[in-house]
Image (tube, rainbow, N blue to C red; front, side, top):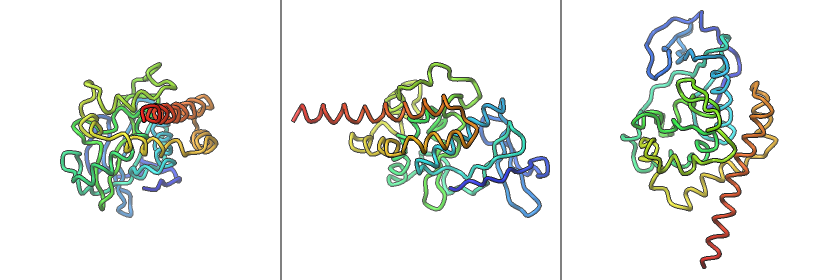
Amino acid sequence: MTMNTSPIDTTTLQRVGGQLGSNYAGIFQDDSGRRYYVKTLESAAHARNEMIAARLYQLAGAPTLSYMPTQAPDQIATEWVTLDKRCVAHFSASERQQAQKWLGVHAWTANWDAAGFDGANQGVVNGQVLTLDVGGALAFRAHGDPKGQAFGTRVGELDALRNNDDNPHAARLFANMGRNEIHQAIMKVTRIPDESIRQCILDNAGSPSLADKMIARKNDMAQRLLAESAAAIATT
């Protein structure tokens, strides 16, 4: 879904509902009846990190909620939508396949919370599968703790999201993907031009070093494709 670029002043909104996830948040409504889900995060850096992640998802074509900036630097807002389904367990076979198409984007952005607890970070609106929260992507965990060296230039998440015992929720969604499906998911990232990645990050107050890292992570994914293709040829 698209993103609005006009910052909203959340102090002018009326709270009409409580939080749904792990961060302090609520459903808010403006004078015209439009509703937003507003999260207050641990820091402005964590909020900026999530906005950059959302922009990178959009750059790759991966569906998310409609993110928008807020005047408060430590807040994130998304347009409120009524979900048809909110849990991978309720997905049809075709909806699961939709979700699996974006494994490469989740891995590239190091979104360890791609599936969410018990699959609750994936939802369906009007037949389209969405990632509902990207707060666990890039440099921070969903609760705001920095990932440190665990967020490097090697994209180990391509495997970890499919077979890590510490993340059974993601494994239940991605484990049964075949080689070709994984390759197609990777190519959704590797086809993005380096300059588009850099511009996306810098335009959203990200650092040049983060841009360099995300380009390096894309290249690591491209090298994996080349290595696996070479191995497949060698065995024929």
